[in-house]
Structures are given as C-alpha cells and as structure tokens.
Amino acid sequence: MIESWRWVFPLLLLALVTAAGSAQPRSVRARTDLLNVCMNAKYHKTQPSPEDELYGQKKNACCMTNTSQELHKDTSRLYNFNWDHCGKMEPACKRHFIQDTGLYECSPNLGPWIWQVNQSWRKERILNVPLCKEDCERWWEDCRTSYTCKSNWHKGWNWTSGINKCPAWALCHTFEPYFPTPAALCEGLWSHSFKMWFDSAQGNHNEEVAKFYAAAMNAGAPSHGTGAKWLLGQEYV
Image (cartoon, rainbow, N blue to C red; front, side, top):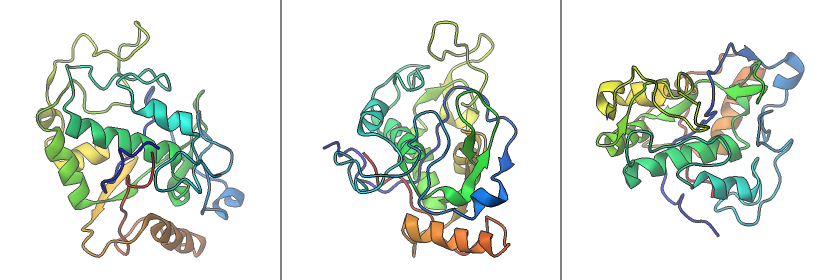
C-alpha cells in the first residue's frame, strides 16, 4: 500500500500539459448529478469504483492504482511533467504537488466544480475548488526555497524534448517572486483550478463539503461562498 498521503493538505488539479482553455459549465442534465462523479479527462475512470491499493479512499476512487503509483515519480509518464525543471524540488514541497495531482486524478468529490472544456486530452476540468487558507499557506511556506521559472504551470512550457522545460525567456528563481502570496500559488498555479477561501478550524470532510455545494447549486445558488471548508489531499495514494 502506498502511504505517502497521510497528512492533510488541500491540493490538486493537474492538467499538466496545456492551457486550461475556455471553460463552460456542465450541461443542465449533467449538473443534476454532482456527487460521486469522475471528470471526463485523460486518465479518469468513467465512474468511481474501489481500488484496493489506494490509501484512505480505496473503496471509491476515480483513478486506477497504477495511475496513483505513477504520480510519485519525478517525471511521470502520465503527462511527462518534470517537477525539477529548475533543479531539485525540495521533498516537502514536492509532497504537496503529488497530493495535488492525486486529488485531481482520484477524487469523486469534485462534481460541483467540474466545467466543460474543449481540449484534445480532456473534456472537463475543475474550476475554483475552495481550499483552506492555512493549507495554502503551508504549501507556500514549504515551497519557498524551491525553484521554478513560471507562475502558471498549465501553459507556456518548451516541450520539444518531450518533457516540460523552461522557455528561453524564463529565468529560474525561488517560488516567491513567481508566487508572492499563498493565494497566488494556490489560485494561479493551475489556471484557477482552486480558490483560497476558508480557515479550517472547524473544517468538514470532503464528501460533506461536496454535498453542501451540490445542494446549493441544484437549488440555484452560486458554486462558491463562505459556508463550508475544504480539506483536500489526505484521501488518496
């Protein structure tokens, strides 16, 4: 059993290859089914199902076990994305990105934030998933001494070698110049897949949060607000 996701951090979304593109909400028909669903994306299952080797949520996941295993590699075959594009990323920082990717690939609790996109490798993405403020802050603190060359990792890489490399004009610096605040990191990194919303002193579990937002959306309310907390990243792998 893979057990590297034992700590509670919010982190997700990795469509690692291209720009997010123009997003549209799910159709009216699809939006009536917002709980226990998987995205229409490259490595996702059609429906959640058990994965015996996954930590925590092995009874219900949108990813296969081998997808989860691949996420832990420095350069994964899933997207050929290299975390170490500006030198070795600190292990404490990299754990957040592994958890982030695992949430995106594996969670069945993202339905209220799934939007349609028109991309060759996926037809849906997540947008503005609410993250706990202190988890964004911890992610930012753990990554301040690691290096990168871009503030949006969805687009603008040099892929001529088959893996992502910094474009010629981009200089490697520590994270802080590219992500001056925790919100800049959580919200800007993956084209607003996340939104930093809450303090989580009285946080809820992911499934309850998804139910809260699904009920609000089916009642015609907006898909964001100030009524719930979102604790991500502890469930998978």
